Image (tube, rainbow over all chains, first blue to last red; front, side):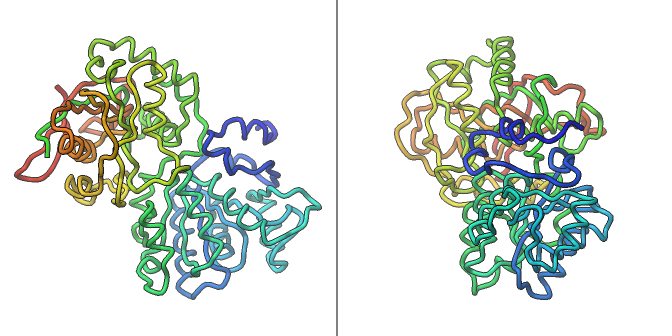
Length: 227
Length: 212
C-alpha cells in the first residue's frame, strides 16, 4: 500500500467534511484501517459506571464479530474498555489521540497505545512536540466523527466533551447511537436533544440488526464506473 | 393522504446480496449517502438522464420545482443533506429549480436501520413530522431523494405538499431504488431507469411501490 498522504486524504473529503477536518493527520500502524472497511466509534465517560464498561465491551465484541473496526479515543473509561475488548476479541481498532503520537494521556495507557501502534492504528492530528491542552480533546472528537461511519455514545455526563462528537457526527450525516438506558435517564437533557436531531437509541442486542443499515460513508470508491 | 404518486429512479442497490454487483451497488449507495457527488458522477448522471430523457421528462425539466426530501430529523444549517446535493446537481443540469420548502419538524426513526417494514416509521408518522414553508413557484413538483424503498416517506411528503397546494402535481425522483431478486436478493445490474407508482392504501395505511 502506498504511504499515507494527508493531502490526498483531504482532497477526497466533501465540502461538509472539510469544514472541521484537521490540518494534518499523523499515523502509526496499519494505515489501511483508516481507508477501508466499516468503522464504528465507541465513546463515553472517563469515569463510567460498571454497566457502561459492560456495554462498551459488549458493543466492541459485537462489532468485531461482524468485521467492523472499533474506533475510540484511548481515554480512560469507556474508550479503554472498547479498545481492549476489540483487541481481546481478535478484532481491529483505531485510536484517535488527543495528544501527539509520542505522548500518552493518561500515562497508564502507554502499554495499550504501544500495542495499538504496533498491531492496529494510532492517529493524531497533533504534531510531535505540540502541547497537550484541554482544547485538543474536542478537536480530536470531531476528527473521530470524521473517520468513523457511525458513533455510539455509551455514557456521558451532562457537560461531557463526548457530546461534541455526537453533534459533529450528526452534522456529517453519520449514524449516531446513544444507549437506550442513557436516553431514558431523566437526569440528563443532552440525549433527548440529540435524539430530536436524529440520534438513534441502541441496545447491544440490537446492534447486529442495525449494522446492515450503516452506510460505509468513509469509503472512497470510484462508483461512476459501476453503472 | 394522496392515493398515489408517480416515481422515477435511475439506479438500484441490493441491501444484502453478496455478488460483486450487489456489493458494488452498496458502494454506490454509500457514496450517495455521503454526498460524494463529484464532477465525474455528475457527468455520468447527465448521460443517463439524457439517454432516458423522454421517460424522465415529467420529473426533470426546466419548469419543475425540485424539492429535496428532508433527513429523518430536523436539520441544522451546516448539516449534510444528501437530497439537497442531488437536487442542486439536477438544477445545475437545467432540470429544475430547487426549493427547500419541505421541512422535518420532528425526528422519526431512521428507516434505513430497520430492515423489517413494520419497524419503520409509518406513513402517518412521516406526514405528521413534515411541514411546508414558503411558496412553491411552479405547478409541477418533483420530490428529490437519495433512496426509494417502500415509498412511505415519499407519499407522506407529497401529501403534505398537496394539502397546502392542492393544485400542484407532485412526483418523486430518487437516484437509487432498494431492490434485489426475490429468490436471492442479488442484482443483475445497477443501472436500471424505472418509472413506477407509489400507492397508498387508506385501509391498511401502508404504501407500496410498483413498476409501471
